[in-house]
Image 1: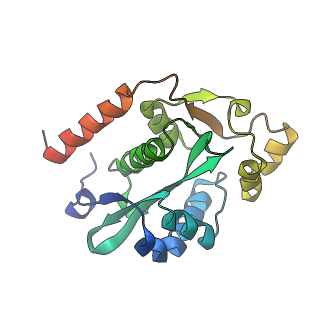
Image 2: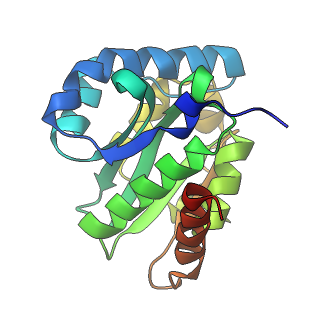
Length: 205
């Protein structure tokens, strides 16, 4: 079993604000490095774009001791708030393997539900870990046609190395898996279960 350091245990996950805009360039580098290491597609985002999400209060950021960047995720809205995506989930290498992805994704999910309670929350990913997290939050796998059809969302895939697959299939599928949370179909039981687990972890019970 991996030994968890005191630094890893003391990570704080919060909603980002103006004061965190200075971390945008570091966040972009982490996303690009993760894409290169994984060898699969992760759509690139500009520093200015990440800054805009931070200053709009549409992002979650994690810090270790000394304000060391530990992780990040942001939310996007599509079709006038009908759909919300949690995107750009990243954890710094030294903070991986301690459940931080789950904490960040849950915080982004809660932020999405708070800001857009009627919206369908969706995502596309090639990461088995993210698929597992989404499943625990109540998402279900769906075809791409059940996701937003906003052209701006799909244009964001152009920087992905697998974009040609998306084009060849007329945007029906790619290497990513589509997942969707529909508040009209779900109750909050899974999210509450995760909250309970987090409380147990933080108290050591």
